[in-house]
Amino acid sequence: MPRWSRCRVTISCDDGSPSHEDADADAGIEDGQIMVAYMDDEGPVVLAGREQEPGHFELVGRSRLRRATLVRSGDGRALAGAWSERERGGKWLVELGAACDAGDDGSNRAKRARSEP
Image (cartoon, rainbow, N blue to C red; front, side, top):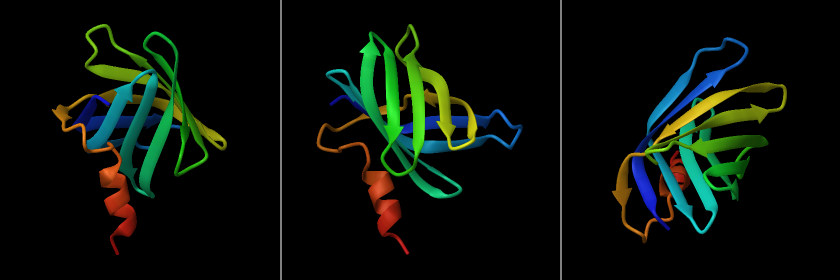
């Protein structure tokens, strides 16, 4: 699976809450599947999903009751979309970072965060 490390994830909320940014996120896309892992103030967030049409993805949270969409930019270096979780929602942007080894499943950072005290 093509993977990227050191991705920048920016989350904005429709309710005017402060935006959140994680500059050390992971992402992977292959065979119509996508996975994005990042940290926010409440801990690790892992979303995965499928391509619904070329470059358009629908994701669900593995770690939270979150649903999201992402659309890949024309140059392939970013994805942007919307998210919702319970009564909250907003926009999010994933700027792809450096490509990483195929042996990393892209969620190692989130896994490490769950195991840290």
